[in-house]
Amino acid sequence: MGKWWSALFGIVMLACLGMFMVAPFVPTWWLPEGVSTHSGQVDALFYIILYITGFFFVLTEALLVYFMYKYAGQPGTTPRPTEPAAQGGFYAMLHRWFPDAHRVEVAWTIVPALILLFIAFAQVPTWLEIKDRSRKPAIGGEKTPIQCHVSARQFEWRVRYPSSQRLRNWQTFTTNEKTIADFKSFASFDGAKPRHPHLDDVPVVNEVHTWKGQTILVQLNTIDVIHSFNVPHMRVKQDALPGRTIPVWFTPTKANTRYNEETKRWEDAFNFTTGKPDMGYRWEIACAELCGWGHHRMIGRIYVHENKADFYRWLEHVEQSQAPPTKPQQKVAAR
Ligand SMILES: [Cu+2]
Image (cartoon, rainbow, N blue to C red; front, top):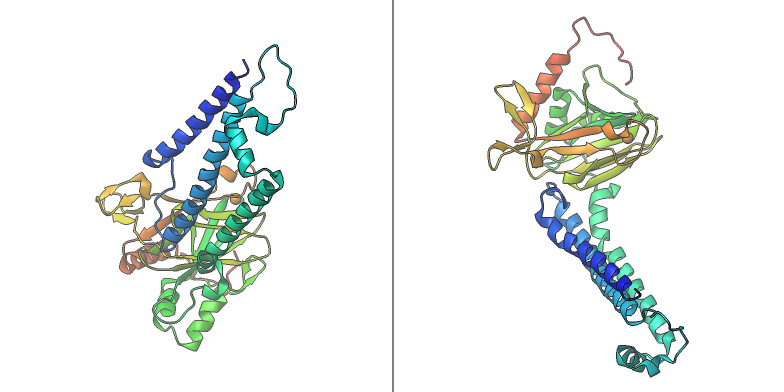
């Protein structure tokens, strides 16, 4: 029986390895297509780590299976301690190279330490670009982001856009002091509540819109427990923490949303290259923090319009359809 254990381990490990090699070619088994400007960098880090860990996984598993086979106990024999060198073969060769196990231990401590240090430093530029607040896109010049507020709650994402008029101002008068103040006041919160909500703010649920090539700055917070704003296609993941508003930004490189003349709606999951609906172009915001019984249905979507004009057409459409039927009151209740 003894030697069969090594076969079992060997087969399971080979099956795992085989699945790994096949996965990138099977739809939905591997990483979704990256469609933000920084997704290439994130993927590069992912692959560096995967290759390093993959190499050592295969190496250590192969050694494990080999030793399980070679030194399997046989029925009727009692194990006894032996001098490793006396056993000959591969083990003796190893023993010649490393007569002192102390050196081996030093080696397997230093090598992983160096690899970890390498990974730690290699990821810094990407991390800074995605997360560091000094790189946060700010109002001013061509790179002025559009800004929205995403308020997470059990169990949905409530999204607040400024009115199309204010958004246009932010994008046009980017050096005007009043506009800059207005841009900042949108992101000013008392707890999770906006300090300066406007009557004409545009609320939508479970939808975040921008257009191709346009950076969006999401002011993320939560009114209840911890949630996580996870957009795999954009390679974006950020926890929403009670009591804090955390800026999140990304720039899509592809569009997935068009106005469907037949249904009279803006529909995502559209592949502009093929000109056909394509589920690979449905870009979900999936809450990535177990936040309660309805966690699984806390799914939003990212709508990337083809261009600025189409985005504003959508925003104005929502504005008009949500305009209050009666005369607006002076103050709007904070959402
Ligand atoms: Cu959640």
